[in-house]
Length: 77
Image 1 (cartoon, rainbow, N blue to C red):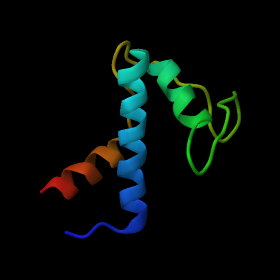
Image 2 (cartoon, rainbow, N blue to C red):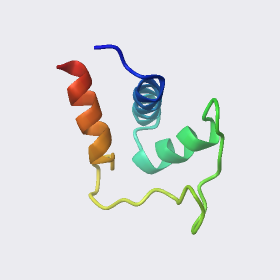
Image 3 (spheres, one colour):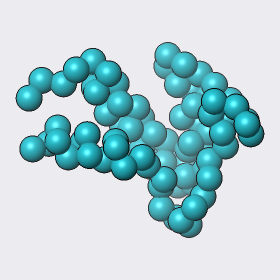
């Protein structure tokens, strides 16, 4: 199955985020680094803006959108 460009970009972003997680071993720091160093849209997470600071809803578990997980599963099948 050929991915559409935006689907490939989502997977690339997820890969980049997970690399930051591996590097820092801290999801919050990885999230901030991901957005500050993003190759096409560098942003600084800030409350009440388009990119809010990381919300640690489940300790020690990266918070990733379920739509992204579905996309990845569909891609792998």
